[in-house]
Length: 317
View 1 (cartoon, one colour):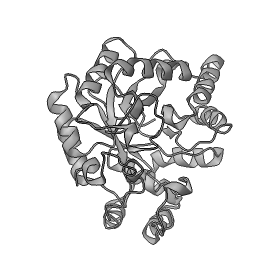
View 2 (cartoon, helix red, strand yellow):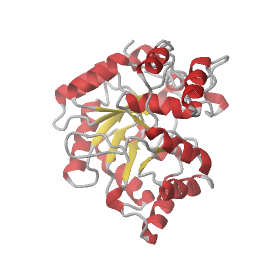
View 3 (tube, helix red, strand yellow):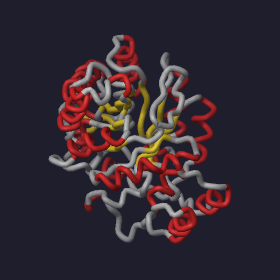
């Protein structure tokens, strides 16, 4: 399995299994199938509301002796209602219990957005907490304590802009090891990749296939598709590969971790095989021309109903 070096002490597998949108009743079998065919990186989050099932699958596979915990890379995330420093440890320990493991390899701040304690998703502006009142650095200090106590080996963030990531790096005792962001040919984020390379931060690409299976409520009208774009189709035909394999190979070729989601055994195998696909300079140039700065997951669901957050504030664009 191809791995990338993370702050000199960790080696996350470059291709992992994403568990967002994996339905209850399906994700447990998907994780077991993935581990059986060679996946060693599982990306989780409590807001996906399936961590107990994921944990059941991990525990079952470990119990068979086919793989040990030390060969797995398990990532999870701190949800927005647990940013208060006195809630971080409890949130992480709940995730550990649900996943049936003693530690995480990587724990991420899911969004630079804070909710009041116990709010799964806000119904009004009163459910939010502005970052001015809940600074990220205060949350981060509690994350650092979790590293010191052995609850997680590495810490990082998700959905951070360059400005927010730079501010955190300037204040942190333990620098963020990872920024997990939406990344695909329509949203190539070259300035972010350059910043992270300079700081020694790895990048994980979520929605690397374009997130076409998102719930309808999260989709925009007439949004573009990625898998059937003629350029992607052409590159796939040239290599006798699937369009998904081309998109994953593109991400891997840029030295980013990719975490596609599937619950279908054959697609799991196809996605994993993307590790062996190498795109040439012509392929990369053709795909580079597709960048349009388009976000499928733009965070607009955090901006309505009296929220203190706006898209401009969220992305610093």
